[in-house]
Image 1 (cartoon, rainbow, N blue to C red):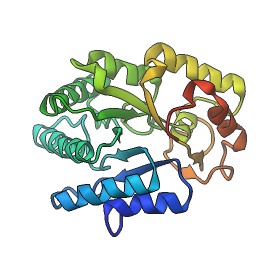
Image 2 (image 1 turned 60 degrees about the vertical axis):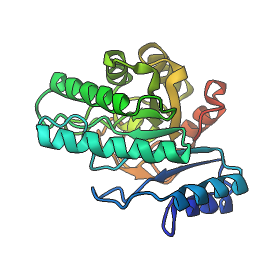
Image 3 (image 1 turned 90 degrees about the vertical axis):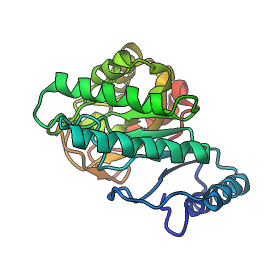
Image 4 (image 1 turned 120 degrees about the vertical axis):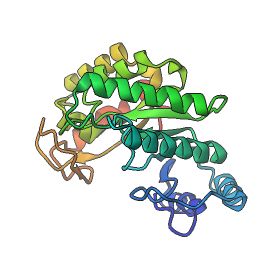
Length: 250
């Protein structure tokens, strides 16, 4: 939901659309620099949350952040930026901040896993005592991105020194693009069972419900409006009717 005009405006817009959950960006998602969040921003957001009664609010981290960066300067910039996102989210009382694990940029999966693990450990250390959690989002699998499978997400969680604050966000378009055919009930169940084994369903903190503009197993991160893409409406019925995720924001 857009934060144009102030963070609190996202909640007001969500209420106008009768949303039960809202995702926001905490700052411009395509710029590194951002002005500090003021006490007035926090108070206005809290007031809007009370007025709208939208409790399920979470954020998406900047698209610029690459926790898997091999270069030290780029890695430090990513860690600093993500720490700032968590600090902002904690001040607003958000449930979690969603982030793409990152890209190893051709340095190999092991390099990527090691860098992301180191980054997550450092960010969790810096934000010790915070309640806000980190939701690693599954990816479409294109290029050198990490998180294409639940196994890869589970590997990142397993390696973490403090895994209790880590969870996942499941994007339906990304699942489909990465090779999980969730158009059928059986296909959805295969994906859920893999998630349960590799990640633990209790770590599913949020869903991104998106249709896919590209065909099955394309590896392309191209979203489409629900019902207008290659996934079709059936896939979303499986998700929404699954009692195991009844309380997970969507």
